[in-house]
Length: 510
Image (tube, rainbow, N blue to C red; front, side, top):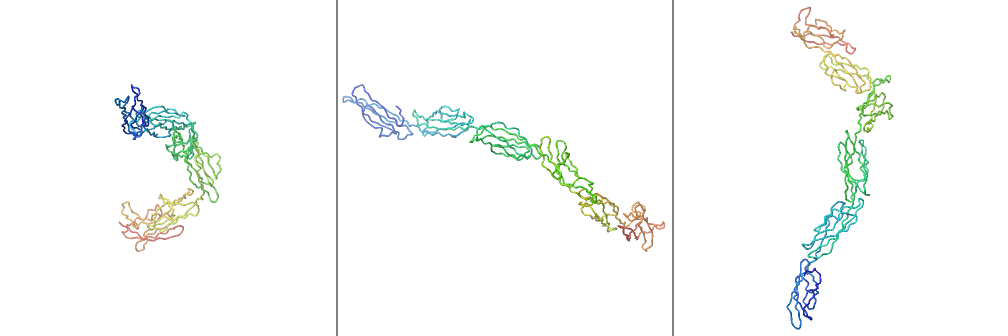
């Protein structure tokens, strides 16, 4: 016969002979011997209390009947005492979100224990009675906006002995879901999103991640509204927000929100200059402001000193007054408006004349100095096809005619002048080969200039014209060829209105 720990035996002794009495001896293992002992009577009623409540105990009673002074044959009765299992129930989480699995593990101090459970649920579906070594049940809140709970009562059992039931409560929290719809959002670069988020349950917060293309300013975040300033620098871009509602650690179904960001028109204006004649104040050269944009797809509003210029709606505007100009450009398709771009238009009085002075003629380092008496622009100077320079002095200029050009950086001045630099060849070879067969001054173009050639003794050999077109001296005197030697010359000419004379010598080589 099996009992559970702490049970009381209930053994009634009887015989076929009336008046029979009984005595017994008790032999026990793992039982409290103060409660299980030898005795006499017609009933054995003793408490079975395990010394080690993890192991089975037993007692063997040897019962001897007595009647009329005679003893009967002893009979042995063995009683087993089984331990009562204790258990621990360990839920993975005491709170779960609707649709998640409630998981509860069971453990006991004794091996071989089996478990069964019952439940009571409030506002939750998915729970059921059962048995096994753990509970794994998907629990769902009955109402999308409110939570509920399930109370599981788990009872351990071993060899028909039931331990104390353990209760575990699992709270089921509702999952928030989006409420309403979010309209399509289209922004201009630099504008701020204002995407309000609402859910089925009050107090819901939202978390989002972003994937952006050609857009800056978007970032992951959380809150009850997406408020971010987005910029598309050059081309239309998009930001895709993946938004999920969250309440008390429970996440609802995500949605995606796409925001299109259009770039702003980017007009460019450069400061400019009007050309105004100083004496009369007449504007003889205007300045054209150019946005750099096409007329197609854009509208333009031009302003002068803060006031709208009526009728100015082209991508360019011709300024004829000094002041502050600005433009605002609107994309007619996206309606995105540019920032206001400014340009200052100033004025310059152009230079009207210039003069040049040639110094160090007849050297290898002739210099041209340019003087400009008027004009307020920033002047630049050019010799022939060379680069423009800020200096008004050209050095190392070769003999001959040169073109000097004067401009200003504002585009108001453009003047040119031919400048003559004179020199002479140091020798000539009148041998009839077609090269250096005659001798003359280089670069002289003065009709009244006089050139005299002398021999080494000072005898006048030839007087010729040094001007352009002159044949020069061929090395003869009265039709006779003169010998190879040094010859002297004297040049009377005018330089910058002053009479000058230059003397030097050259060689003739045959």
